[in-house]
Amino acid sequence: MLYQLYETQRALMAPFSEFASATAKLYNHPLSPFTHTPMAQRVSAGFDLVHRLAKEYEKPEFGIRSVTVAGVEVAVQEQVPIRKPFCHLLRFKRYSDDAVVLQTMKEQPTVLVVAPLSGHHSTLLRDTVRALLQDHKVYITDWIDARNVPVEQGPFHLDDYVGYVQEFIRHIGPEVHVISVCQPTVPVLAAVSLMATHGEFTPRTLTMMGGPIDARKSPTAVNNLAMNKSFEWFENNVIYRVPPNFPGAGRRWTRSRPCSRTSRWSKAHGT
Image 1 (spheres, rainbow, N blue to C red):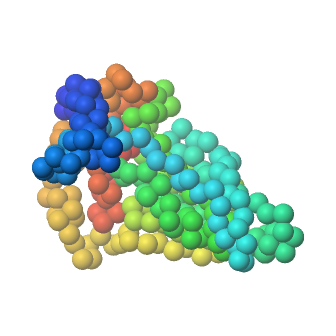
Image 2 (cartoon, rainbow, N blue to C red; image 1 turned 45 degrees about the vertical axis):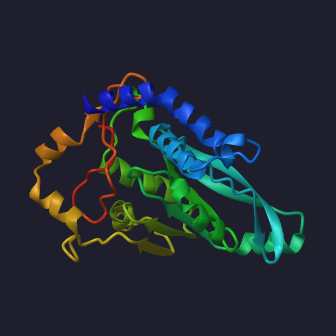
């Protein structure tokens, strides 16, 4: 019910958000006479804040069109080699007419960046991807918000997460280097460990950033909350049904903080 109330409030506030945006511009545009009135900057800032609080934020683009490789600017194109219901594997393909640069790019290592799946988009790592593209062939996981995945696609649990990572690694090949950032460290470690157990190839290197594997070490308030509340409490207080205005209407959904610092699985799994 809370999710439905939130969406209803957002829909009702949408016209006021646009009005606030227009008023903010009225008080800060250089050609507007209101810009030169007393307190104009504060009035503009106040209305701009109202606009930001009420507006709906769309998923941002990576927007990486070119990078510099070996001192030469090369074009970059986003490709989607694998499309899954809950995630797309993105590849940032680099192009150049310079034969020397092209050969350099072919010899550079391949890296898979496993982005977090907890309340924000993979574009949070835009600068990381841009920096890696100077010396690497780069892939990244682009997770899809569970509220946009129809219920017919089924649930998404930890074992599905591990399976996705394994499929991506197999697709890229044995020369891949894997970097997991924050929340995905546990499923990535599980994926690689299971592949090794089954005698499959494993990534050349595995870098796990900001996601403690042993959640008992250096506990935080997030750990304490997870350990002091039952699974039933989380199910009753942080998981809601997706409202009818989204493709995933009816799916159980939660927008929680990244949980890599806890041993519990509380992502937006959309069961």
